[in-house]
Image 1 (cartoon, helix red, strand yellow):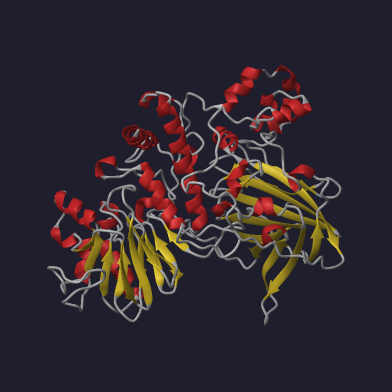
Image 2 (cartoon, rainbow, N blue to C red):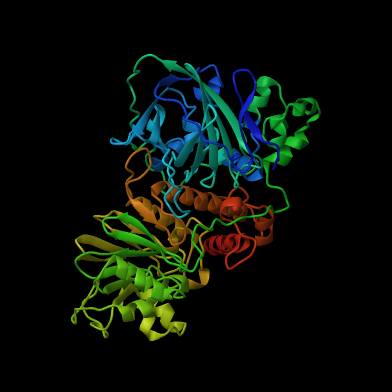
Length: 608
């Protein structure tokens, strides 16, 4: 990364505000600020294609992207937007603020003290409504949900409004497939000179950028309301008969449109395929010497693996953290896998129990949420990080029924402690591995689902055959509309497809699509059904879609190589996960990128 600061210049060229490239700003004394309220329009002559019809394919010049971002973009097929779950994708905040259309800003003030609470910025396109909190509140924890607009806090420094944004969804740096990850953060500056407003954004993305991406956009204040502020979207059937596991994509090196931009403007392809060097003026002198070999080197992964970084949003301070989801349903974090608790006028219902290392603190946290005893425990799988606390939570609970509970009619230990429920394969594997009987499920089912009505909500437990194991289940709280996925979906790593325990890549894709068949977004592919992954932050269907797309695309690449006769070593050498490794990969630990690729290869080879 560069070390030189990014500065905003005032009207006479004097530096008003600078930001270092890590997204932090130097300490300054806040001023009274200025009023941003009003109607604003940006001139479309600035980056006209970017703002209107869209940037041309494969044009990534000037963006300091890394190899993973380039490969992601080159594999992107624009027909992916015809998929139901992509038709209403919104724009992330740094893209939304410069999108086509008008913008409106207004202040939110305390009705008694008139203290400034927040500044609202609303973009017409995709109804990008941002709330910039000005009251000093902190950013939420890493496990909080991500949104298109993210979470923004602001302060006035000099004659600039400085804004810090985190918790963004995965979106686009450019609409030609160039990605911005869900780990990106943004520092922005709004500088007003009368009816002229200059907006500067500095995007830091540890997944897809080598250096920060800096953009500026001009706005001019308009005298009246433009109307037409809504941008409604409803998904629909666009291509009939398409298989649910079909995600349009190009294989590495097979994108047919790479040279169109170069042919049109008489440029070598290596000149516009992006990278930090393309963002600096001195690159112009190198263009004439670029060759086809330079371009070919950018179209496929390098033979040397890059450093991978798994994203961990779980707290590791030895405490249990509680995040309210909806309708008395809560997420508990800190003891391995995510734990979900439902409370009400009946006893608590718990989905998964964590690793067990902090089981007593988990019980204490549940008791703070409900005075009634734990009544039921549902296990989404047999893995120790989801079932390790079973025995302690069971002993801390109470089952008032002696004839049958939760999803079953009758079993041996009915009425003794909390009831533990799971698919039969979970019980079978826990017993076979010698796990203590007190923590094993006794209330099991064999096919499809189990259901109950508890704490005034309908709860369904669906078996997902041959997903990451042969005993995975998802749990759906229907009134609260919360889906707990277990390890079928995580935000921290590639799916741990356990072939020895009945897992498969095809079953994993079916399970992810089954989750998507049950989700409903609130607006613009955001909100609505809450999805709690086995590990990672609170999601909605958008994160599941991106994860599903990733698994399908990797499956397609491996299957293509298998069909051409490639060995496992050749598939690994081809780095078929190169564009996703900075987000989900790991070079060491219990589940590495190599292990994931090998599981996909062996599973598909067996099926072939």
